[in-house]
Each structure stands twice: as structure tokens, then as C-alpha cells.
Image 1 (cartoon, helix red, strand yellow):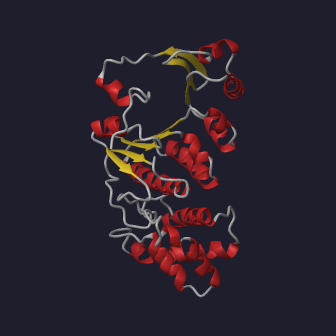
Image 2 (cartoon, one colour):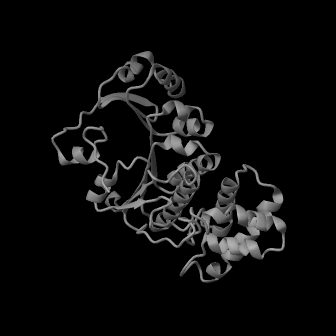
Image 3 (cartoon, helix red, strand yellow):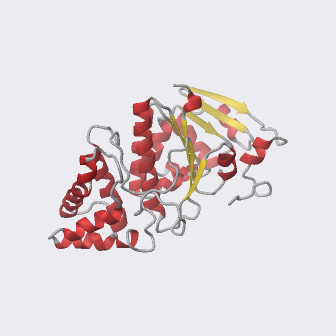
Amino acid sequence: MQDKDADIIVIDPEAEYRALIKNLGGEVIKISANSNNHINALDINKDYGEGKSPLNDKAEFVLSLCEQIMGTDNGIGKDKSLIDRCVKIVYQDYENRKYQGTPPTLEDFRKVLLRQPEREAKDIALSIELFTKGSLNTFAKQTNVQVNNRIICYDIIDLGGQLMPIGMLVILDSILNRISKNRIQGKTTYIFIDEIYLLFKHSYTSFFIEKLWRRIRKYGGFATGITQNIADILKNQKATTMLSNSELVIMLNQSATDRKKLAELLQISEKELSFITNSGTGQGLIKVSNAIIPFKNIFPKNTELYKLMTTKPKEFEVQE
């Protein structure tokens, strides 16, 4: 299958891609507590994860989601067992239907928790109530957006602090669903994550982005992370490992501190560092495998594409 048939997925924290995506015929999915757009956190297909045991992989995701909501990095064994049990129950009918029809929701999951005899199950149900019946229930409803468009942009500028870590987990899981499906179809998936440093602020999103990074290469896809905050990236061990193992790294102008850290990590010489020291727009270094190449690529401003891509404050307009 040719790349012209590939899927393109963008995570956009600053609402900078709307014009470009819409002009390419893509779907911009605006996600926030007040948005009418919903993504069902419990969406799953038969090829989810490794494709061998979709429910086991999904149970791991739901456990991470609950622990993120409950504010614990390692929930006690009883909680984990209860969550695993309830995941199997809530998906029982859907699994019997071979993952066809309407999948369960987080609200269905909460109802299953409330039916359990253990007090701990009621505590978990109470913890997730805000995200199921409460004001932050945007991921507890059936998906009502066109996630099957070939080009998708998740606009998360209004996601909000409380919903951000949960929302990012659900979006990454939705992308994993897509990648799993595309692998079976032999279709390439390109993922672009802007301000990727945001994903490393929370342990669970950090874990899931690393998992996605490893898996997409095995599934014949490509993931690209974009950031101006390289110092924040290099503080995280998972992010540092991902960066050092990436086949392609493009570097623009860097601060003295960041240059030093990048030089150590990517083995950049002093002469090569001069290309990311006080460098102009469109100039820098490209690291491809073990080769490091200086480049200069000035994009012409008198083009429609430039107008769609620019993020300079005086040139950029947020489009609703």
C-alpha cells in the first residue's frame, strides 16, 4: 500500500494545526470538558494491543486510567483485582459479539463496580464518578466524532489541568486502537505529537507514549515528537531513551545548556554544534542514524502553504 493511503494523526495542544488539517480535508476533533465531541475511553477492536488478548491489554489501560484518577502510582492489589474483574464483566457481552456493535462505556464500568460486594469497589466507583456522571464525563460517552477520517487532529488546547492527564491517556489509547487496526490492513500510520514534553509530566502518559513509540515502529508506522522544551524532555529517563534511539532527529537553534546535553546524548562535535548556535530560521542539524548533517531550509513566505503552517504571533490566527 502506498503512503498516499496512509493515516495521519496529530496531537495539537496549541490549536495551531486547525487551518492546515481542514484544508487537507482532515477532521479536527476539539476535546474539552465543555465540548460536544466525545471519545469513548472503552472503545476497543479485536486487534487492539498485540491482538492476542485484547481484553488483557485493555484491562491494563483501564487500570492505569483508574490509578491516574485516584492519584496513586501503584494501587493496592485488591483494587487491581477488582478493576480487572470488572473490566472482564463489562466487556463480556461485547466480546461475545466479537467486538461488533456498541461497546461499553466508563459509566457502564462504574455500574459494574457498584454491583460488587467489596467496599473497595464502591470506593473506586466514587473516585471515578466525576469522570463518568460528573462534569468531566466527556470520555464516558459513546464516540461521536469521525475518528475514521484519514487525517485527524486532536485539538486539546481547552482540555484543562484536571482533564489533561486523563484525556491524553484516552487519546493515546484511541491512537493505539487505530494503529492496531491499520497493522492488519497493511496501512502506514504517521503520528505527530506537538509539545511532546507535556506527555512526560505524568507517569501514566509517559508510560503509554513510550509503549506507543516502541509499538508503532514494529507495526510499520512512524511517530514524530515536536518540542521547544528539550530541557524538560532530557529530565525524563523514558524521553531521553526515546530520543537517543530515534532514527531521525532535527535540531534548530538551541540554548547553551541544551546544546551541551544534546552533544553528550547524540555525540555531536563542537564544529557541528555551531549550526545550532545562534542559527537563523530554518537552519540546524539533522541526525539520521549515525550521520549528522547541517541544513538550511527557508520556506517561501509568499505561498498559501506558509500561511497555513506559520505559528508566528503576528501571522497566525486561531480558527474556530
